[in-house]
Length: 146
Figure 1 (tube, helix red, strand yellow):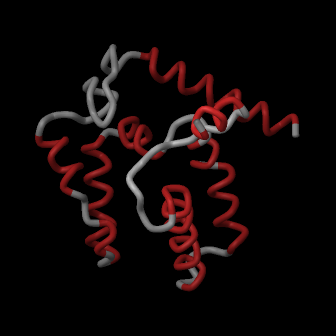
Figure 2 (figure 1 turned 45 degrees about the vertical axis):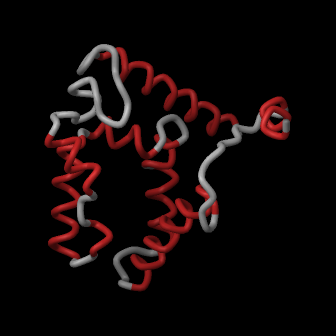
């Protein structure tokens, strides 16, 4: 009942297993903790970090969530980037998770093979990219108007 009410007022409720901090906070504070680590390590200023998020992946994430983004990159590429980050930083949080390894081993690399975390009708076709780019352009236009 509340789920439907929220939908009628334009919200996007999600039913999931109970977890500490809710999905939103868990994801948001992972990003915040990473940003604060970069500041502490004097890698970047607060202004630079905010600029990268606002003008980079922040725009993309308004149209494509983080999991579909992995499919867009290619899960093999994601695995290689995570391996590199893990080796160079020593941060265990970057070790490629088993779910990525399993999908790569099965050849489920995302958009380019037609299957990753999501299924894609036409592997490697321009249709997916065209639709995604349209969403990003729509987001950019909305920001421009505000």
